[in-house]
Image (tube, rainbow over all chains, first blue to last red; front, side):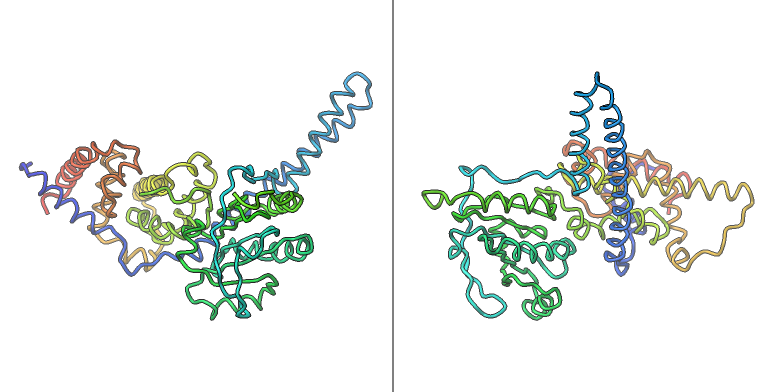
Amino acid sequence: MEKHSEIEVSRWVEERLAAIRPPADWQPDTIIGLARLRKRRGGESGRGRGRIWATAAATAICLGLMVFPAPRAAAQRFCMACLMAAQNLAAGGATRLALKPERSRQRAPDFTLNDAAGKSVQLSGFKGKVVLLNFWATWCGGCRIEIPWLIEFQQTYGDRGLVVLGVSLDAEGWQVVKPFISDKKITYRVMIGTDEMAARYGADQSLPVSLLIDKSGRIAATHVGLPGKNEYRAEIESLLSTKMAASGAD
Amino acid sequence: MKPIDARFDLEAIFRAQYERMARVIASVVRDPGRAEELAVEVFLKLWRNRQAQEGNIEGWLYRAAVRVGLDELRRQTRQSRYERLLGFVRGVPTPEEIHVATEEQDRIHRVLNSVAPRQAELLVLRSHGLTYSEVAFALDLHPASVGTLLGRAQQAFRKEYVKRYGEA
């Protein structure tokens, strides 16, 4: 074969390979792809149900063993462990608190935005309350899943001092957000955020992003993506039952 | 190429990366519909692989996508070889297949199938505009060696192409 310079070969190969690139007007359908992904994930999560049945079977065996005196104590302990594991699995996995230790919590950046009714909402005005600050958008699948949870949390814990605030990052603004609020019957306060504000809270890469802000106005937990409902609930309860730091902040 | 996120959110990653991964696969798989199915499989693999979720996710996705695509190309090539051997007449190709399977594309696919898998991965990723450092991230290579390896892969590709189809 004739000897060619590296650059010539490189150009020649690149020209050939350009022919296999899909045409620019071919658009893979992300919505169909996402539906496929959810279906497959849902199917595989069915394995969790199998684990629940296996744990229940192990519990039944232990209960049987407890009839005999010798292995009774060990069986009793194992039985309790199985019951706890089954409870956790049924609740969608282990409940882990992602709360930061009080000393390492940073003050949440303050903001003032108008809610859907046009009333001003300032974060620093909620001192003494626990704030669940949720960054979301109407097009975000994970956000749609957790919105009913947030409504429930506001109803359940509102009297004990929880304030849920939703900050929408929809580029179209109130035009798409207001119909969404009435469609989903959102009862907590919703504002429209800016990219700059989202970046300050680390919500500029993906959605949803939720922050739990303690009674002293410090960020106690940040959830990027969809956390478990039980995880949320446990963290809210923990923050509500904690007294406000004496210094007030930092 | 930066890590996509500190915490793993599959759907956000899917929305950001699906189109790119589907295009990488579609460049080596003849049927675009099949390429889309395989792209979803890549994200499911990511979902199952906790270790991959903690590293450079975009690089991992590119590597998985190009490998899944080349595996499918090999499978398709084997299948069509057996079909020819058995004299099996394939069903009527879909309009998409007719559109995609031009003679030149078939040639390139056959040549990619013949060179070393690592070289094929390098060539395909580079043809999608990845920089040297992005290719290095995706294929676990030292960035300084990408240029040399790519040069060898291009030489191997050209040699195989010319051997089969002559200078074009």
